[in-house]
Length: 78
Image 1 (cartoon, rainbow, N blue to C red):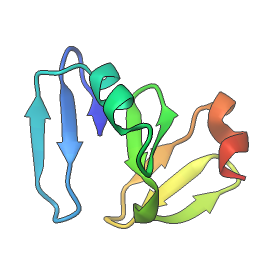
Image 2: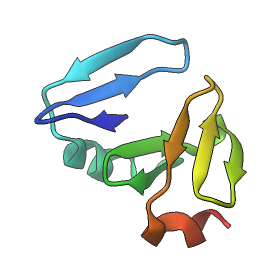
Image 3: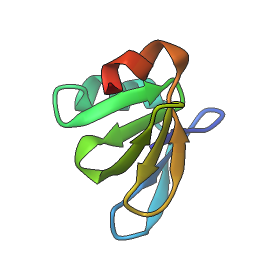
């Protein structure tokens, strides 16, 4: 998931995506107890879709996208 101005863009494993009118904070509360992780204030990811984590703080996802991890969250991935 990626935060937009007032909406949230949701990316699915099958390559489709949709836009929700809910703010990303709503999803944080719903998904934080699952295998989802907030890696940046703009991104929530599912841990099973991580392919690689670079020590510089970049996560490579199964779909090939790369997501930056915030400085405060880097230690959680090590």
